[in-house]
Figure 1 (cartoon, rainbow, N blue to C red):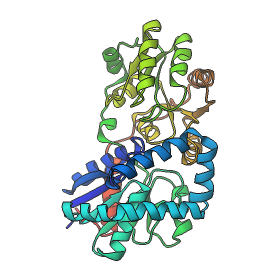
Figure 2: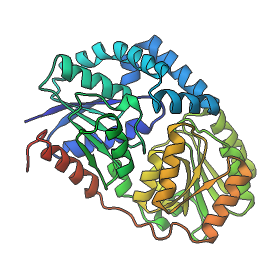
Figure 3: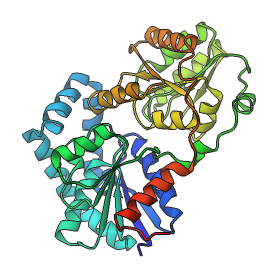
Figure 4: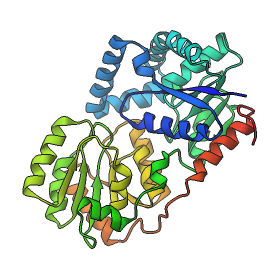
Length: 367
């Protein structure tokens, strides 16, 4: 029976970590102790710095990011393949050492490069190692899929089909319960959350955030929404400049309540009528809490794919990438009563499905 596991995350934003935390919480119910490590940090300080700089540069130039994603990652281009080989050669020894150090019998990868390193380790040295990939993106690119992965867990039929594009006989399980941390299943009610935050009970209230990096026109959108009579819970994440601008804005518009990097997101969602965010794991958290979503189209590449899938799921709208565009989209969304049919989801869904999939695959013992 597997008692110890390793979760391979990646520090490009916070999204991979929150999926890893959801996996760790679920595995703990079956007595599997896990340690989560950052694949970027494992590659060494220099590689981590270079990788972070490259990713931020690509993200800041959307046409360049789209070109790399759709031609080299999605399109299996030579530059993408070379990039993958370089990353795996750097990461592989560190993953092998981490598995030995933690005495892990299971590796769960929630980050694409980690998935490749774990699969290589199983192929070359540790055939006994159980390897699982948990992918919340709506469509897989080449770095997610490798021979040596025992099980792929995805969140849609579209994602499953994209895995089988690379490996037609891959073992893939579509999870209907989203991988969300337990605290999002145990939020205060709307009135209690508003009392704590000082938001009037009958006011319209939007939670405004965009990943850990605070990407997009968040301060302008907060001002525009406040000027339309909406209370705004505005989260800057780790974006220090944005945090300063939101704090200054709150002095002139008291209905804007600013936050930096905070662990109060479940409470903020509970207080809100709508969550304004970029496409990603925040969308799943909002749906679990029972809130509709207005999407910011600010993440190119895989972000565009994820955005379209969120729209397909319903209870969501997309805004133009300007302060006025966000304001107009939020007002229209609330006027239409959109998202009101979204109901909070039970905490047991993800845990039961994950353990069931691992049991079926023979990775953990049955109850």
